Amino acid sequence: MNIGNVKLENPYILAPMAGVTDLPFRLLCKEQGAGLLCMEMISAKALQYKNKNTKSLLAIHPKEYPVSLQLFGSDPMIISEQAKRIEELPFQILDINMGCPVPKIVKNGEGSALMKNPKLVYDIVYQTARAIQKPVTVKIRKGFDDDQVNAVEIAKVIEEAGGAAVAVHGRTREQYYSGKADWDIIRQVKEAVSIPVIGNGDVTSGEKAVAMRQETGCDGVMIGRGAQGNPWIFQELVEYDRTGILPGRPSKEEIKETMLRHARLQIEFKGDYLGIREMRKHVAWYTKGMEGSAKLRDAINQVESYEELQELLNERIR
Image 1 (tube, rainbow, N blue to C red):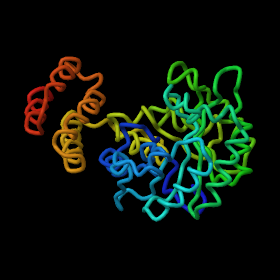
Image 2: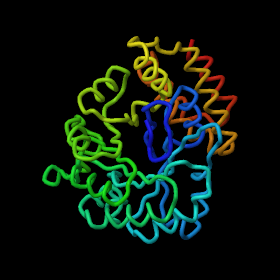
Image 3: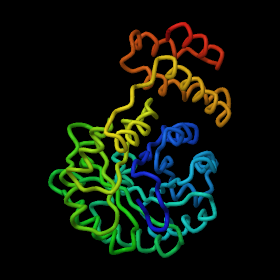
Image 4: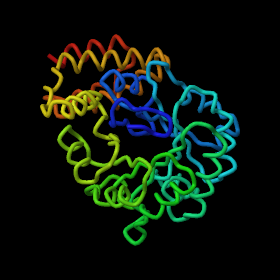
């Protein structure tokens, strides 16, 4: 699959997730075979004001190519100017967020609120695609709410403005992440545009990824929550696609070793204090459904160091 001039080894893509798809987690997903990694969303305004906190969000490792950097904002001039300013960074694709449902973002007219304004969508994509050489893609939703289901219209606008691909989450903004994703809207978008269409929503296994591709004709499949605590999903998707056989799930030992390695990467990247604290949510995801996982989650919130984490996991996971 190609996005502009960027070739993906396979069509399975890690979705951009704030607070999740940082560098350590992306590296783990890459090792498991993800075809494209999407970074956490970055505010174009924060870049403009050279906000210190955005520096760590911009970190990219050569091992993770190809990688997509996602900006959010609502001002075509600011987004396109900042895209140009950071173009020298080693990302391969620039994505614009038009799907985030979080109230703070929507209230500012950013994220999924942009879907209510096709003209503004056009201006943002048009100006950004002309400001940089790298492919510009956009992530959208089914629509803002059930009365405004306009993913097809918005996708056409994106294509016309020079977008290189569009990712469609089959839920409206009002749905957030509840209910079932509507894959039919992805099919409708695929039939309406000629740029690559990436389907997103409720893909948690190899079978579901194949089903989505068959039902919608989408070119790529984006995995969000299905990858939380589960970087192995990418190996599963690639293997199932190749052989039609699902590989076995990782053993408890492998899950434990991956958690510890993830923690070491977090600490290396973010320091002891932040690294360990950020591991707490990941451990909750990794151990979901395991025997005694609720008690382990309580205990993990008391952990202050790598040694304590190692001791706890060795004691609880056997």
